[in-house]
Amino acid sequence: MFPPNSTLGIIGGGQLGRMSAIAAARLGFRTHIFSNVSCAPASQVANETTVGSYDNPEAIDRFAKAVDVITFEFENISADGLDRLASLKPVHPSGEILRTSQDRIIEKSFLNQHGIPTTSWLPIYNINDALRAGDTLSFPFLLKTTRLGYDGKGQAIVHNTDELNKIFNTLDPHPLIAEKIVNFNCEISVMVARNKLGQVTTFDVTENQHKNGILDLSFAPARIDIDLQKEAKTLAIHIANSLKLIGILGIEMFIADNGQILINEIAPRPHNSGHWTLDACPINQFEMHVRAVMGLPLPNAIRHSDAVMKNLIGPQGMRVWDSILSTQGLIGHLYGKKIAKSGRKMGHVTKLYPLHTLPGKYGSEYF
Ligand code: AMP
Image (cartoon, rainbow, N blue to C red; front, side, top):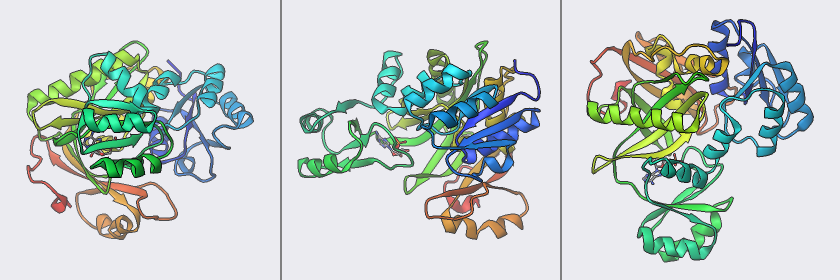
């Protein structure tokens, strides 16, 4: 267990690092951010920042020497950079977990080897593999990059052989992965945290709605059967134990129209769909993450309220900020980003409801 005033190093300066740093400060820890830009959202609330590129050995060394333990808030750190960090200080979650989640082929292979269901998929190394996918998965199917995809980027639906060549050549980098399209009733996610002692805890299941490939609304708890909620949490714990996770992990899942839960992807860090926990739980996802990484106990993840969270995206999101500030019962969070570019996550807003009173209606009329 790291004592108060120890320094948590966070790779990445975005909003997930910012909210982790705030949680760490409340527990009496110092934070040091590694970011490739100065004045990043996380740096604005941290004790120190090392500015450097994520593959610069000299900057990595300087950062690692200044901290006691390292975590990350974004996933695209190079394998070399990870190895270098791990040779200097403890890194949680481990580089191995990050490598698994960075690559959809490794990720799905890992999940399936551990008996965890996903949609049917095929690795695509060349155009012949892609043509075979048309036969095996049947059209339409999804073609995705295995790496560097986020918020729905790096993927396309392939409807027929004519489209296949074009999409195969457009998606970058290769290799690719072909996935059978899941006809789902809803998308859910589970945040699961685990510490070195193997204590593990899951937050309540979240239901997620996307707009233009980006998370728009999250509902907690998910408006699904209690048995499905239990099954989703059991799967999450199984994944965390299989990975020997130390830290927090966001797991995105589909509930297929036949009722089966299929895992879409895992993210070994706090997750946008867990932001509601900031306002609806005594210990939120960021604190749980910091506790796990610093070797602190992990009490049960309790929810004291039902919640709906809406992301504030780009200039449209910022336009409603004033009305959020003047509306009773809305809890606003901004991330300190100066320019509201289209598609950029600028903040989020949460509305709480007494336990077990989340209305069953769908859509943006919540706000
Ligand atoms: P991803 O980048 O894999 O998280 O995908 C982004 C979004 O695309 C997901 O949240 C789903 O809405 C959709 N999606 C991804 N994979 C599939 C799939 N195999 N079947 C149906 N929808 C998918």
